[in-house]
Amino acid sequence: MKSEVCVLVLALCGCVSAQLKGNQEDPCQLKSRVVGDQTYCDRYWECVNGQPELYDCPNGLVFAGKNRGVTEGCDYPWRSNYCENKQQVNSPIGTEHCDWLYGIFGHETSCTRYWTCWNGTATEQLCIGGLLYNERTHSCDWPENVDGCQKHPLCNDDPNGNVPLGKSCNRYWQCQGGYPRLQRCPAMLVFDRRSLRCVVPPTEDCDVPSTLPPPPLEEDDETNIPQNNPKNKPQFNLPPGAIPLPEKNRPRN
Ligand SMILES: *[C@@H]1O[C@H](CO)[C@@H](O)[C@H](O)[C@H]1NC(C)=O
Image 1 (tube, rainbow, N blue to C red):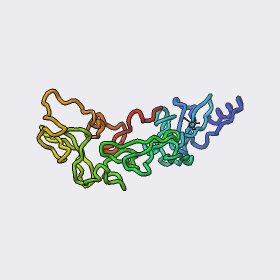
Image 2: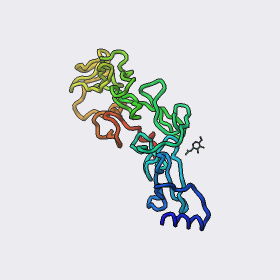
Image 3: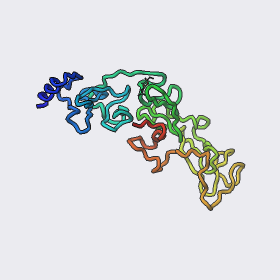
Image 4: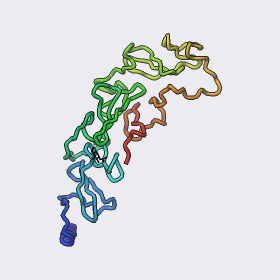
């Protein structure tokens, strides 16, 4: 039946496009009008003017499904098992900092930085809050999860010392064997930038904390510090402690 329709259509309009082969699903038989190629995960078929047409995903991306992925129904390959039992047919097109035209790649010289590439244009990104770029998960992660980059530059001076956090009076970094952890001074104490410990106020920079009203967010605090904060809840399977890319940098359809 399917082949009869095909022959009929070909006979009527004489159009020839890439032929559906084997068990390849026909996008024109589907409500979505688009379907992944059965062999190659970076190709898909779309029904155009009643004909199945074959398309490549943007370089570095693979087919995820209609209205899914980061652009044109295509997504970063590592986001899911898109290429399970399939091959990628296209070769990488590299530009400066980008292994493929689209993707997220490690930095050449820094463990806290990485590149997001969009159509070959690289944008430098920074992991904040004591995190390092994890090449395996393509996201910011706790240092102990990042092979080859275990120690964070924050803790270079003293792998087990305390480090001030901006101008914060009650929060600071505590380095533990080179790994920074965010800490808060006990109630009524403030972090003293000189002695690098929590002390009874006032200090040079910090007055006695007022009990009312609750202190507003300090401007120099990094507001995006990953804690067990539901606002930072990842939208897909980021590792614990990782933060997603800032909204404005996240590619959209
Ligand atoms: C990608 O960049 C190329 C050349 O730099 C340009 O011709 C093309 O239109 C761009 N494609 C998209 C989807 O932005």
